[in-house]
Length: 186
Image (cartoon, rainbow, N blue to C red; front, side):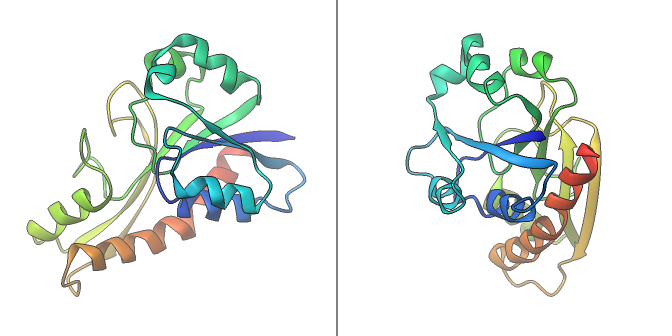
């Protein structure tokens, strides 16, 4: 059995999509959801599927001893699904090419510190980009600069707001993220 742990900071819609995808899988399971926010919606989503949540503080996350919490789940892959903290170097060294992230734009455009969620979609909208999309990439020591695993674009010329772009991109994320996770584990 290959274990996956998901890190999320928000509502957890991508996390739930991944959890549902592997719900009846005999070789891959979501072992836990980790979150840095005790009020994150992802906790309730995980609970619906009887998946334990690990809630931690930002200061705990910066300490190398945090690895003990991660290794106790023996993860084959660590998936960041709307996780907003920068992954510490100790974690990247302990899990090289085993940590992936999803980004709501076509990297390298609209990546970096502070570029997450609606901030990305506002920038795409304000710059009148004809397309946007999503990127799944490996995590390295710089925000959104790890090697790209998968991208898909979508036309956004018909979108009248950043929120409309967000909805279109989220559809792409839900369609592709679980499939890419599964491909990486095979």
